[in-house]
Amino acid sequence: MTVKPAEYLKRPYGRVVVPESDGTFQAEIIEFPGCIAVGDIAGEALANLERVADSWLQATIAKGLRVPEPIENVDYSGKLVVRLPKTLHKKAAHAAAREGVSLNQFIVSCIAEQVGTHSGAPPRLVQPMQVTQPAALTGARSRIRR
Image (tube, rainbow, N blue to C red):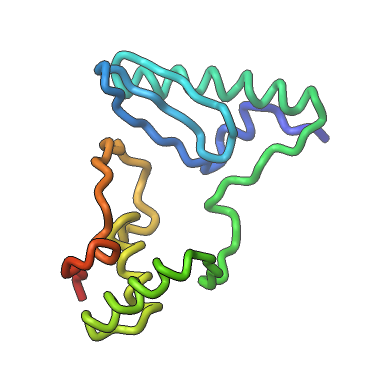
């Protein structure tokens, strides 16, 4: 039995809307590579995204490719292996020591601060971020909330 695009789109796929520098909005479904739409307002970008996603799914199904599962349906163990340069590892360990926490807790706090701690929250409008060098890399005291 082949699942129709409309049925897939009822599933909890991650939809993200980002404002662009020209005042328009870009929307995408995280699990569908290249499935992107734009609009003059956020609601228009999301409406356009549904039409683009329908076409994306039709093409994927027609090619016999696997449609990804929604990220929300994936089981996560809570364990993550990360490879990083030795210098970054050393700086992160020093920053954790300065904060008086384990390296693991320091990294969890950094991720929580960056990603947010609201689990199950509905998709939100993502504001563009100014990229700065993390405190762990600059030697500055980090601001971790405990």
